[in-house]
Length: 341
Image (tube, rainbow, N blue to C red; front, side, top):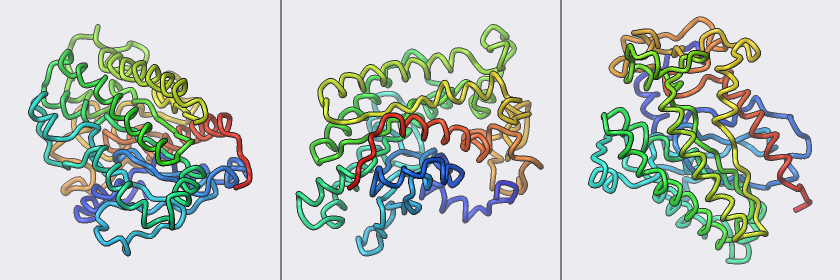
């Protein structure tokens, strides 16, 4: 799949349905007890979000675009993630930060509202809905990355972008509180990725000042420090939620440190290219925003995608996602007590 070109029409469709594989088929069969833990998955986020077949649950259908509820196929949950989705709504980002983005105007709040609108059609009564959510895994993102990425790409000062971090974290915390009220008890909450290692931002901030780069990885140190700041505030807020709701389980998925292992020890994971995009062209990082993966004249990818960490300069390859999904899955299984439904 990764070595094939993506047609423009297919690309646009997948962008709307949040196509990139984070929790993928490669985790299938990791834990034979996994299917006893949850009957459903409900997930939110952006194009870095998909759901894990390794839990013994069929692939979760996307809900976005199905205005007619009859078109929504609910079997074992729904995926409300939308490619390009932000944590904060677009009008706020434009008015307060000056962020302009034409990819989507869908925010995390919109996804949550869609979930609440559809929930009554998925269960027969209030008590049934609570039981459904009690037996479900709620995956909260990754979300917020697009808020930051758009701001960085548009040249907004890092000091101003840092003002978004507590607001983004609050969006996640508020959503968890709402879902707890509805009956949810088990949450997987991913942290942010090391954006200083992402080819698109490495290309944007490419320069000659070697002091800004990690000499071991080649990643931009100051951008990774921003990701660490986000993750620190998120972890602190999740701990507050755990104390406030002692009967719920919140598992923090440490995307940052798990992924940084790829850059520090690439050979250990089978990677040869750490900072170049597999499906891309131009410059030292094989990324050009005007010649994105899937659009002509860029019709092909690298010969061996499994030796690359980055797929298109913004998303990871299936090989990288395999390692990441396995690590997250293991942490989830350690934290969750599986009982008969």
